[in-house]
Length: 71
Image 1 (tube, helix red, strand yellow):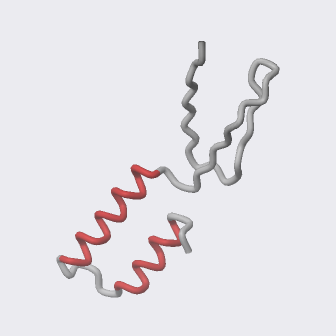
Image 2 (image 1 turned 60 degrees about the vertical axis):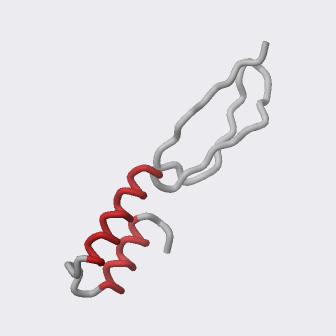
């Protein structure tokens, strides 16, 4: 019987491999930013931009991309 194993890594900077029960499963996981947080911050940025609440959109976008490690 196959069993599924789901692992969630947050703020992981490199691929990870895990040896489990003396077997090398064929999977790896990587993430640079928590996806839910990233989407929320991106939505907030777009909302604030559309309301005209950002004085310097280019700088704000650069800062957001750097924070999310997209730059």
